Length: 217
Image (cartoon, rainbow, N blue to C red; front, side, top):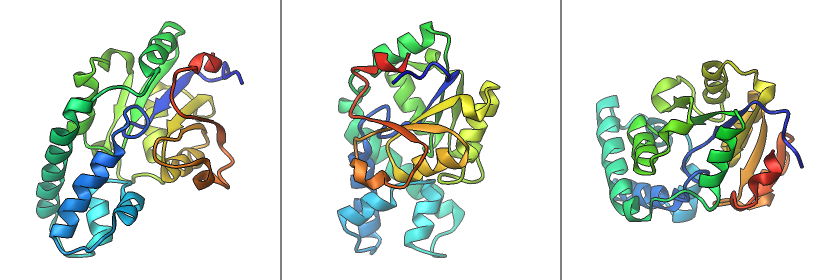
């Protein structure tokens, strides 16, 4: 399959560029259960989407102030970074894919529900900032995925029409978000199997990594 019609590649971060979602799940699972959530690891996996404040509100409606949510969010991200730092690496084949995309003149952006603190941790730790023409974090949008705002903001910053953008995602909520933005999506199956994406008509392909990504040119 050839994707020459696309002028921009938009990447989710966690689970899409780096295989780190189990570390986020583990960090939240510990913190929330210490707060009395009694939540299973499988349920925690399902809840790991959107902004940190939104996740906390879903689990503990009305319990915490914005300041308390800020504190717990930072605590969680510090725990995640401590646990994951030694494993920080791009998903197989992505380094070459980013270079080839850049050489081909394709605009690239990251659209993530992560706070910029975590985006910086990844892109500076891996020395890949120069590939990206835009970075959109949780701090840059009012409505997180599955709302389309994250991807719409990426497209706007790149000055590329949504139908000329191809999104790379790993989660059903992210795929739904890209569909709501009018964008096609490639799913990388790091956390979810193909069966979890039934019904999403904007999915054009499934990949396990970027090793054979020459098909995208």
